[in-house]
Image 1 (cartoon, rainbow, N blue to C red):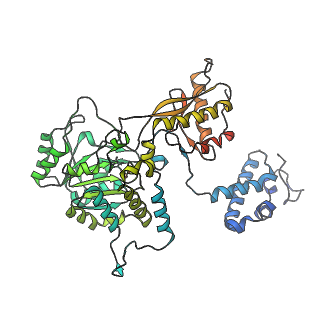
Image 2 (image 1 turned 90 degrees about the vertical axis):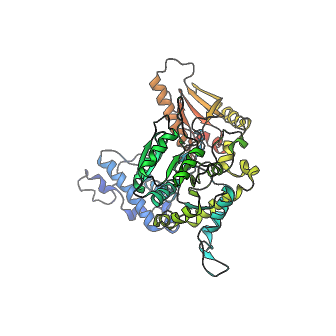
Length: 487
Ligand SMILES: *Cc1c(COP(=O)(O)O)cnc(C)c1O
């Protein structure tokens, strides 16, 4: 309802142009019955803040010559308070087709990890306390033992993320010293992990080896003249160099490093502990394989293919890990009790590898059988078809998902999407208009109570159903979808 500005507080004989003065005061607005119970529920300062914001907005609008709905001010305050009190992270539906999506929080945690984390959050725990001795104990000691037994490594430690793990390895072992890396492996991962930058910050001097597409053993042999502190091999996780290529096998590089008496370190990136073949997925080098090939240290992420919380694991030679743990940076990058609990519980699931495709959501989504995905896609398509406005073509159609976060970049996973194509059979709609319709439709799905994130491509909007386990969450809110109108 649009009303002329209120003039409640000013003398009616005053200059009628000074409309903002006609707004209620904060106190007056707070007396509205709709706001009566709010201060008790969320605190007075929060409500006052919201009332000020709403009044400021109304004032600006009036000053700009606009009108306001004076009666709706209290409702706007209620909405502002609700928004201010809502948790800052909102659950969304990942229908992008990228399973481990960094922008959407990478791995969803296994139930066991969520329970372990909740337990550790709720009460005091023996995080760094030796119950038998009754004094200070080893922080993360049991987690490290679990990593050792799963990987076969002599020693291990876990830190904030894999970027921190790489930084620690380099800063501890190669500060102010040379580190040869193949030119084909100077990776940049999304979110500003750039190997050359990390190396510089860690104090290591990058010695580029070989060419972008081909690096030979003799290139590394020549680099030994720089008396390097270690040799680093990085898994080229988010791209593939294809065609006329050559990389030196880990075993040969490990043998060379052993001859020269320097550590050989592999940054695996995703780092899986199980052979993905068992889920019908393409092979990705495992941590155990990297260690068996002769790596002295291996680093990998906790929240990529491992399917746990954000973390970085360093596993390998005991003397090197001991030096790393003494670096003050290790203290700065350490894990808190919640993530120690979550990572430990995630790793515990790996002692039953046959169950992983059930217990670890990331692996469950990656291994999800195509017919299961198709059933969901068809159900969603059947639901959308009758409610889609004229001109939208809705169909369940084969597509490809990707693992994401740098694992297996060149490999695609067959999947099924719901594809929405604008103005099918209406060729008069221009490309630009169709593009706008698609962007608007993507925005409408993002504006749902539980935002659904799809992707626009090839003249259509795609909702990949691989990660949608409860279609009801999507279907239950389709009625509130604001379909874009054709121009
Ligand atoms: C992802 C990745 C990193 C960074 O790991 P975070 O856990 O995101 O810090 C480092 N190296 C490689 C090869 C990666 O794939």
